[in-house]
Image (cartoon, rainbow, N blue to C red; front, side, top):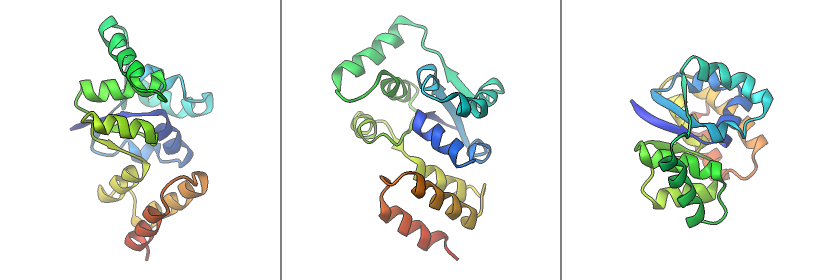
Length: 166
């Protein structure tokens, strides 16, 4: 099973779209970092914490000096990223895991470092491809997502409307 490291923006979007239950049905081994969890609002944490407690999402706790130094080294090598961003990049690289993020700068830097990176649209594609939701349900969630985030590429919305529409 592929390991997936989740950035805060992915978890936030998943909770906003009421997709956490479906997201966790995907054939992935879900992880996030303790630093990312600190970025999650209390309201969203109410949804996510039980999934960590039940081990549906593995919480990576940075406790070793080696890991802390590795994250700090990434932080110092690139401007415009937070320590939390660098924590998911670091662990994705360390665990040979896929990184899920909507952060453009993080996507670019991690990809150029050899990390496989995807965003929320990939997640919706997987939810449909793995038959967790129907195309119609996926399209409804996608429409909501685009109403919440105008920075997403419109071409991807148009493409999915064509693929998933009736």
